[in-house]
Amino acid sequence: METVRVPLGDRSYDIKIGGGLLDQAGALISPLLKRPRVAVVTDAHVMAAQGERLRQGLQAGCVEADFITLKPGEATKSFSELEALTGRLLDLGIERDDMVLAFGGGVIGDLTGFACAILRRGCRFAQIPTTLLAQVDSAVGGKTAINVPQGKNLIGAFYQPALVLADIDALATLPARELSAGYAEVVKYGLIADAAFFEWCEKHGSALLDGDAGARTQAVKVSCEAKAAIVGADEQEKGKRALLNLGHTFGHAFEAYFGYSDKLLHGEGVALGMALAFDYSARLGLCSGQDAGRVKAHLAATGLPADIADLKAGIPADALARYMMQDKKVEQGKLTLILARAIGDAFIAKDAKVEDVAAFLKEKTGR
Image (cartoon, rainbow, N blue to C red; front, side, top):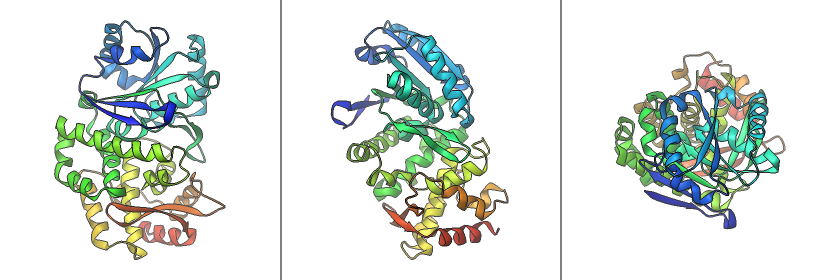
């Protein structure tokens, strides 16, 4: 079992990474409990695939659990589901010092974390991510939120978990598309500030997707180390934490256009967004076309969308531009993008001209 520490003073916490962690959940979580009882929030797919393992793992550590099972999918990150979830937790008598476990992917983690941030003005929670995307990104760092028609993750809070348990074995039941979508967030860490890790991805990405436990553990560990360092230095995204949004401003616009449906998974949107960020950087003369091509080639090789044409949908550029202007990083009406000088050298561009981005998207969409 690997351990990565997120350094946040008296709110620091551990990320445990390895196989069989669901089976040890009770032993790992019980030292943090005021009483041997938790509420578990999950979705129907995760409950069917991994729920019994977690239940037995908690029982082995003498921890009782009440399970709340929600509908799978991005649409669950909504005001109505937030209201229903907080009501269920109150009905269960969850107190501030109790622990709620977010057991699932990014949707469950984001929704549950936000519910815990506002329940009784803050109750404790832990993340047990079951998707690659959640293990390397969304379960770490304390970003919690729901979606609204105006855009993704626009209502939320920074609220840190008490513990993260990333069980590599849980990835074995993940559908291939979900695994590939999560892999986009792994690649992101190499593109931001670690060219050597991107090279590792080029060499080992296929093995990771094919089930190599060693490659999966290494990818989760390196990704969590990178994110923990950034979060420890900039918890509330006042500066360098924004680098973690590489590809997200473009990607969220596509997700919003498709109504946060399974027509485009979050990781797929991020992959396309990263390809576009490098394309746009090359268009501005910031990075080489060779680097942009290399990024697109690797994403395409792992089954991820690397070009708008891959979506096979006629998307108007002006709609994408409107969604991008709802991004959380917009300041005084100006668009902030994460661009790149090279693979492993991303930077925050706060002066991106909306008209230039719109023209670039029009070229790419042809509409």
